[in-house]
Image (cartoon, rainbow, N blue to C red; front, side, top):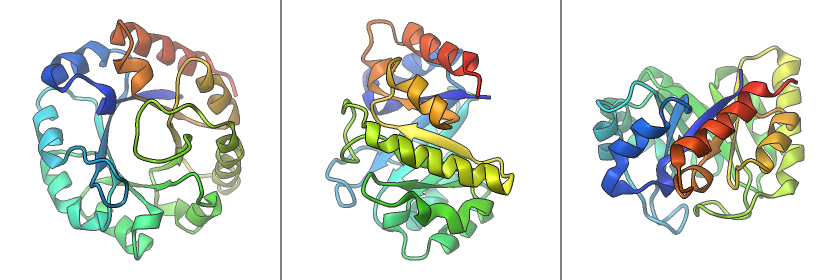
Length: 221
């Protein structure tokens, strides 16, 4: 089943709870982009936002950590109520140890890869993962960037490897995901569409999320 993850990076934080409730009927996952101004230039949010969202929604809360030393934050995010935690392979000194640490804290682990990173770098870890995030933009860290067609072969490659091993690992696409790019990603093998601007910058975020969800539901491999 293909799903939508509503990324709060583009949400109105003055009305965050209200906006989450509006898109909740159409989004299976609430995607929380965490940036530290070191691994990527922007500075965003931390565990306190997850903690504030946990009473608001029963949807899966997915923390996408675009930070240096991500495992140092795992305990705080686990205590805040995070269900999934995904870190960048470029940021972890020992990815396998970070994956184990996330699991020890009862969070489902994932690994993300930057646009310049070969997707094969995640292959040694696939058996232990809940998801792989393929960044589908030019530069990690900013919402509103256009989708990069060059990411499609990476989606296809990781989907082939997951299927070859008979694993149930989600392929999440993150960056420039909208009604035009989503079908291309789904055809390449993505199972989760993470969308920020195309949902929360729309005139009607709930309607925008509903349209993406319909694309995901109606896709036939």
